[in-house]
Amino acid sequence: MTWTLRAGAALVAMAGGVALAQPAPSAPSAPITLEGAGPYHRLTLPLALYGRAAYADLRDLRVRNAAGHAVPYAWLRNEAATPQTASRNVPIFALPGSVASAAPGDTALAFSVRPDGSLKLESKAVKPVGSDDAAQWLIDVSQVKGSLLQARFEISPDTRGLFAFHLEASDDLRQWRPVGGEEQLVRLAHGGQAIERLAVELDNVRARFLRLRWSDPKNGAVLTRVGVDSVQDVEPVAPIEWSAALKPERCGVDHCDYLLPRGVPVQSLRIDLADVNTLAQVGISGLSDATSAAVQPQQPVPRNPLYALRHPQRRAVPQPGGPDETPLVDTVVYRLAQAGGEVRSPVLALDGAVHARLRLRTAGPVSLLGATPPTVSVGAVPRTLVFLAQGAAPFSLAWRAAPEKSAVEGSEPGAPLALSTLIPGYAADKPVAAGNASVRLPAAVVDAAVAAVAQPPVPAQEPSRKWWLWGALGVGLLLLAGMAWSLFASLRKDAQRPG
Image 1 (cartoon, rainbow, N blue to C red):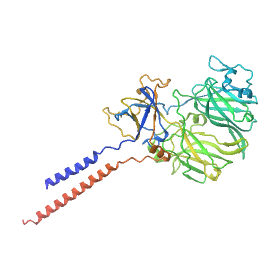
Image 2: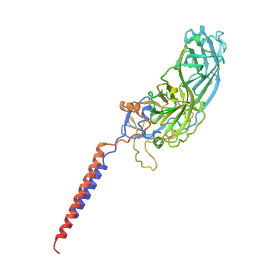
Image 3: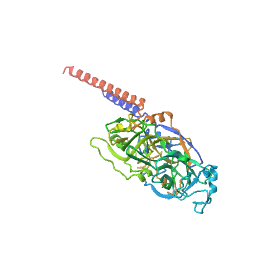
């Protein structure tokens, strides 16, 4: 009987040990392609990764070398820092049709450059500001420091209409590159509502000069002043990425709620109305719930410098029995057919924080948005990290990585460092000298991210480990039942023996 107990205990321990000895599920990963000599490399993360990571702040990301060892990395930009923005009016020059119709490089012949880099007018063909026959406008932003956030246009007070244009950027007045697509200046009155749109986003472009070219030179507005808002940012900003069109998750009497891709910091919002000649006053709020609050840290608001310029900081408003609601923007959305073409409400700047849902609340019934509720798209600038190419290539990016053991108490290999720790001699006022790197996510991850919404990821479970565990428990229970039966049988025999 003693031997039976010992054997049973040994089998149970062996079964449990085999189950626990199964390797933990490996973290999903994707290969990294390096450019340049290094040793540091700059990697911009695709937005599709946000919905697959275990944490909204991406603390579970690891960069690994060929041996599987985590290498040190740091976030390139401190997203919690207050953006240093500036605003100033800039010189503008009206170019008549004769100059506008010439070769693009001929624009430089009308100007010379002063020692400080600003423009000096040399040609009498350029008319003064306020001319009503300007086919294009030259905007001198050479004295603006940092990247350009937005341009604010002023037109004659009595001007009404829709004025389409294209913007281009240059550093020498000869080579020009487009800034975005076709934009519109709008000043209209419709249904008792005054619609005015006289600002355009510049997408953090860096340039010395801008050129505005009217799509229809015979239908251009007279500019009286141009102001430019900029942000001081030493590091270049990655291009904004947009989500697919999102349909409302549900609509109430006076609102529609949209489930957002999980973990994406919402910096821009595009609202696409389904019906032409629709106009409505709306309030846009970010919603959080208990699930999302549990997996993402508290974030400062606002984090988008363009939003900080346009809107005061607002705080979350607790809703009884419901999610916290953070008011973001009050605006007018519209889609109108005009003689000069269709005019749509512009892209909206949001706070750059992570929200589980967005709510569009109407000042009246939700049918003001049209017979079919609008779709929305959200845009964000993906985060960028810098890592040290330590060890042999190839390198890979892993997410949902389990913490690693370290000989140093309190440290965790592979966790993000401060830039000053990663790069000796780092100076915050100088860009980081690093080569480029890119990562290509598996198609399955990208496809899943398109459908991913603000729900926490379900931890992956390895089937083999699960069955081993259940098998070990089953064997243990059978052994315990056998030992109990053997014990009772022995006791019964002892009781039956004559005293």
